[in-house]
Image 1 (cartoon, rainbow, N blue to C red):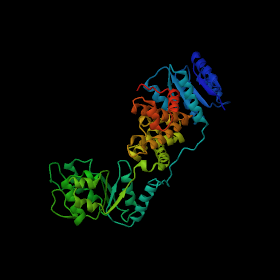
Image 2 (spheres, rainbow, N blue to C red):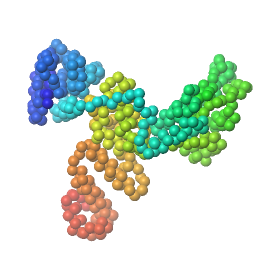
Image 3 (cartoon, one colour):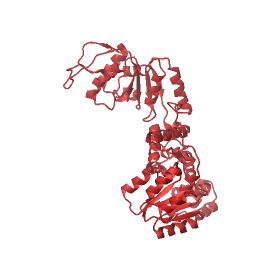
Image 4 (cartoon, rainbow, N blue to C red):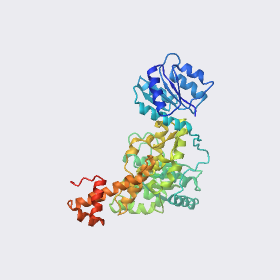
Length: 468
């Protein structure tokens, strides 16, 4: 393996890093100036570079630029005593693996070097999205049912109601329904009925005549006219005001509508696809949604599964979003380790696919290096309670919580998991049994189905505080 290069004009910094890397058995080479290191590049290639930024002559950032032109994949850890915003931004813009402000903790510096070495050893092709990427991804059974429904509806003009939690991809499915329908050559118009004020929504949907209200200086075509012959997607339909529900029902029933302030009926040849994250049946019972409109919309219903119902799709989705982020940002694509992927599968992710996409975009910008491990994930995701541990459903919750805990510990690279969890399990059983019996060991042993001597021995081994 090639050595780690240390570049710093401060002899004491070089000495500290040399000693620390020697203790770890990591081969290294030191340079007092960036120019010396650059001249050495003709004969030798570093595995990792740890370089100061501000040095006499050639700066660390200038050296990094030269290095990236010759050895683009070599990780560079930049150091500086000037911990300012400009230095940090310049370092990362130049392609730095990580930024290490001085004074630094030596153990932390060695850990960064180790991670950079692992990054350097990995030889992988960054995921690249090509023209054959499916419009919607999913191998889970629940998603295959959605795909089959889209296929069956490909020659239909039927009204469709898409239900599912926020972030499950309802608009993507609506666009797919349009793209694979006889109306595909005509417009697809989407409108979020919850995002537009009630006073403006009617005009947005149906348009208005000149002079219909203050500010209406010209006739305006609404969304129904704009989507003539095509598809109108009404997102968050459950939040539509009641008076507009009546107008929408009339369009669906008669195929005609009036612009605001208009007197001439306009015929609408439009396929309506509606979507909601709400329980429309419950809103009907509460008098918040018209029952007749509900039945008009609910001709064909497609339910999109939450991401927790299709966890096997997380790896493919994550790879897709990482490639997409890399393409949009114009940077090299990143990759989640198996541990990071397994860890993500233990998270609740209430924002579903949209939240997973946001996580991938975050790590594309914020994570050091091209390989993303558990520690590189957003802090709020690492702090989140695993989904099974957060639920309160049924008597098997503790087993699901245990399974998630094991997965999380494996993802963190822990060892001796069985022994640690077994001790925790036994300690919890005995402690709660003793609490239940007021500290009477014979009764507690009887409740647990073990001998009194066994319980006493376990209390000593596990160092259980019996005063609770």
